[in-house]
Length: 259
Image 1 (cartoon, one colour):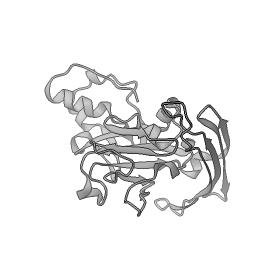
Image 2 (cartoon, one colour):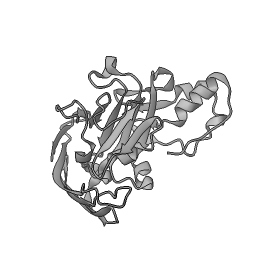
Image 3 (cartoon, rainbow, N blue to C red):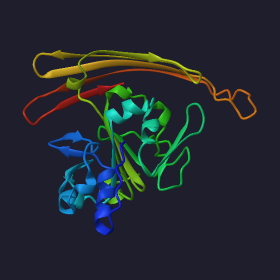
């Protein structure tokens, strides 16, 4: 994300900081602040700017916590291969890769592989494991091209969001099936990420039913140890799934997802 800085004292600097780490929205369409000179925007106008938050949509003056949004363009430009890598762009997030498959993700400290004080949602549904009420980040294999944005609220949120939201909330929002029509394929490889293949096809049934089917495969080599020996933690993962949207009415949408 582009960060704009200015030397403005007092409340103006506070509002500018909030606006800098936010993505403005107008009628639900996210617009980044890349081309806005926030140093010339009056304080009153800054406080009235709309920002997308997880439970609806409000203004900066009504937002009780620090909000960051990683857009699909941010993900594409960063080259992130997974959701944890994309979260490295968010100020205040602690993201560490422990080995070839394990990630430690947290906010406000206390980070380890089994950190469970962060509520993680995908399209509004929690993805934590009941084993330890945390998230196994290695199995969240969503195609990065299908992610519309990642919304992050940092700070205590259990009163509003419930269990796990002690240190913050992450909501991964995927694109609608109507936005992913046609064929998309991507592939690559390297020394650690030895191979990855992604394929997606989106179609339409009738005038108001859209769908996409996808498949992914990845092969990661072992991490080298400091002495040069193999860590023996190589792994592979394959996944396929479907996402269908039925626009049942002007204000009604039915979604079917399966992996």
